[in-house]
Amino acid sequence: MWYSFWMINRWLLLNYDTLGAVAVLITTLFSISTLRDGAGLAGLCITSAMAFTNAGNQFSFLTFEKDQ
Image (cartoon, rainbow, N blue to C red; front, side):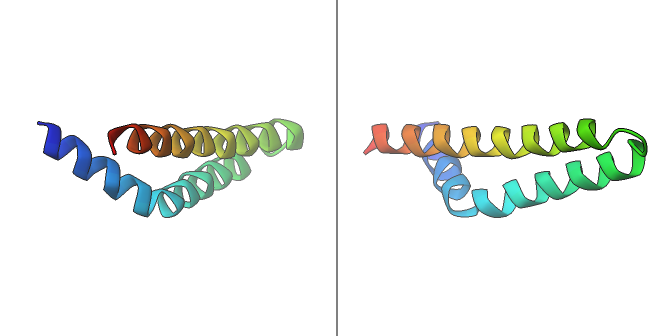
């Protein structure tokens, strides 16, 4: 169990930028296609997605630092 947790955490650290970019891209495409009238709401959705991926990256990094 501990080994699999460590390996998943390591994988996320190495690939989190790509995962974050894909999440922001999906959010951007979704907000552009569905929110035609609300540019402010689309910007809020994109900014929230970027903040969420950054917070996840920070959490993963801090968790990995505690393991060493």
